[in-house]
Structure formats: structure tokens, C-alpha cells
Length: 74
Image (cartoon, rainbow, N blue to C red):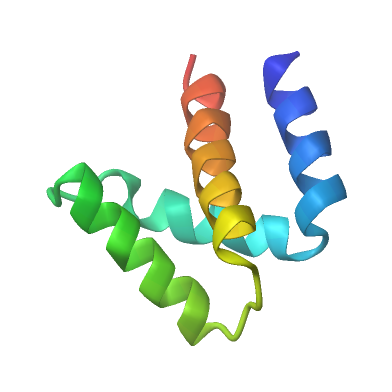
């Protein structure tokens, strides 16, 4: 249930880019990088995709995607 709510809220705020953000976050989730290094990698990849999100929306999107992934793995 939580996963559905997170996804709905993120889609409402971020739009179609939500799926791309989830994909990028998932691609680095299992890496051996530290949390801050993963965050920087995600930000770089999102910018390389040409996604245009404000810093606050980008931070929300990353946190929502991390939470979504954690809920999915339960």
C-alpha cells in the first residue's frame, strides 16, 4: 500500500520523469558506493538524461525512489 501511495505522489509532483528517476536510483542501489556517492551518481545520471527538476523536486524524487525500492523489497 505504501509503495502505491509513494508512486502516486511522486507521479503527481514529478510526472513522467518519475519512472526514469526510479530506474536510475535502482541502477545504483546495489553498488558499493557510500550513500552520498550514490546520491551524487544519481544526480549526475539524471542530469545526463536531460531531466529538468528543481533541486527540491530532485531531492524528493530520489528519496521517494529509495523508499519505493525499500518497500518493494519487503
